[in-house]
Length: 471
Picture 1 (spheres, helix red, strand yellow):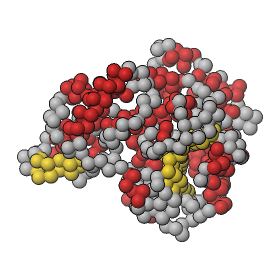
Picture 2 (cartoon, rainbow, N blue to C red):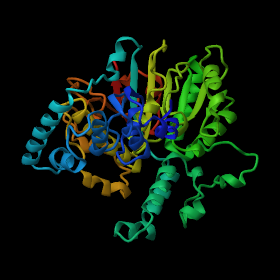
Picture 3 (cartoon, rainbow, N blue to C red):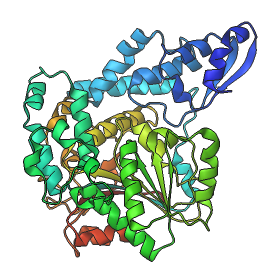
Picture 4 (cartoon, rainbow, N blue to C red):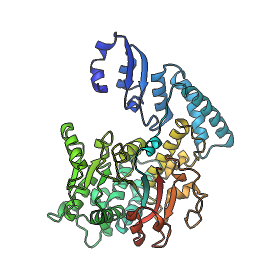
């Protein structure tokens, strides 16, 4: 039964001896104070099994909640765990930590690993690479368009942001939301209201979306990411019989995708939170039918991120990053699943030098923490200091990839050309992936396997690409 149903009947079940409790999507139990965790923990169960692909989503206290649920009191109370393990491990992981911090962190990590490995079986999706076609996963860094850059700089110079950076502002989340939407496309914002004074930067052909009437065409040239996507869709339609899944955190962005598909004459299907459960599977089956006309599937990461199998497509674009890396990982896994027959090409779009790179870097910090604690990866480099979160409101338009700059990558030359292969590609650590910069038609990016990314060497919108190959 679902967690919600179990909570309804927990009082009836309390006194019944239960032999085995099996909890799928176990990261639902990451909060020890949640109603679900408390309800399940109150049952009289002799054996508990948790299944989860993402046991650490944000921090070690969530990991403790899972461990404590499976083996109550083995690691003491939460405050004891925090003192003994969480604080030393985090200090050792911090890029600003001393050698002594790192040594102590490694010791506590080894101690924790030794205890939990007695009751954890860890299987990563590397196992699938034996049974599935090759997956090429890419982080595609896209330069902002001129209109976006003007708006971005203007917003960062506004009195609201200046007072925010002095510690006096009260709405950082609102400001972050505006920048995230701006990275996707200026049409997601009511510019006159949300970025006062932005009228001076309006291009000659700019008309506010609500005033366009029947002209529903998407001005893709206002956004670097949208330009790249527009070219990708045109090439897929023209030269292949591939299908593609487009995912965003915002239904507003899905609205833009929908308008783009309509104006270009592309068949598409859409699944977001407004669709009821009974219709979802019919939609998925229709898309997965090889004879189906629709080659684009629009998906809200919040509505369809978990469990949906879209093997009718072998390409997927995640248009914007989520703070939670587990949410993105769930979304990225929609096409590379049992039953897939074609090689898969997955793209994560990141706006170069912007807040999206900071979100992506924060994800990397969480994932390196996860691979360090859960997968016992010893060589996860300590790239990001927690202090770097304060840099959210910096903009670096001159860089090819702020993330690559923070790696201080020893495998790439100063001009960005990779000259040393990674000894092994670690999925959660993009410093070990292939690194390509876009230096024109004879530059490094022209050597990449995917023809959609090779065509970007003729344009200036893609600045750099990280690539992971599953086999």
